[in-house]
Image 1: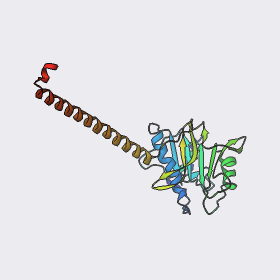
Image 2: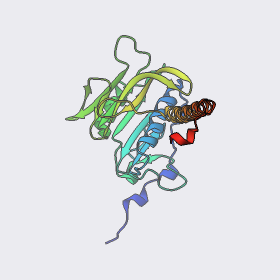
Image 3: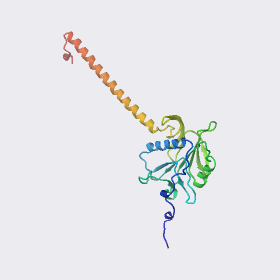
Image 4: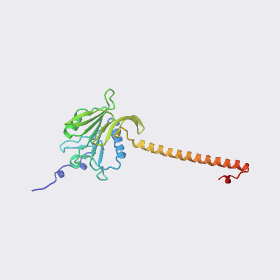
Length: 247
């Protein structure tokens, strides 16, 4: 019997486009997933079993075009394969579905609440589907869905804890790259937000300045103490008392 590996008959990630070449019409489609990825690189700096893709083609069927989420998180796979990194995410190579996909709704509606949602649930079976719509005023801008019995069920709250991932995701006003607005962040189980790379740098700088301030204050007190001791010694000498005799 002829033996062959079926994977050899399928295109590899190197042969497939890395995205759909569709330009984003809103800068947030890059900035928001980029921030989440940068935060993960710090939160999970000691872990190498995860991958976060931004605007990367996900190939799930060799006979169909890829889907390109604004962001997606996969667990249980190598963080990187080689120095060339991943040009695309190919399921018949990775053997792991993304655990979470993120879509940022822009001015051009792309079926985030209909066709894409159905595809992620029914064709792929993605566990978590996160939709962020910064243009919403009356409804919640952030919606987190979990796949249950083949359908997505909305999980209320902000942030929303994701036990299979071990992190929470939520929205909060903050500053990133000098832009102050509502952003998406990762949270711990107690609902405390993790710091962004910029915030960690600022925190480190503040700690350094505080340490220097304390050292200067300590030195000032030491000099004041020495000055007072010297003045006291001079006063005792004027009174004919040897300061050394008092020790």
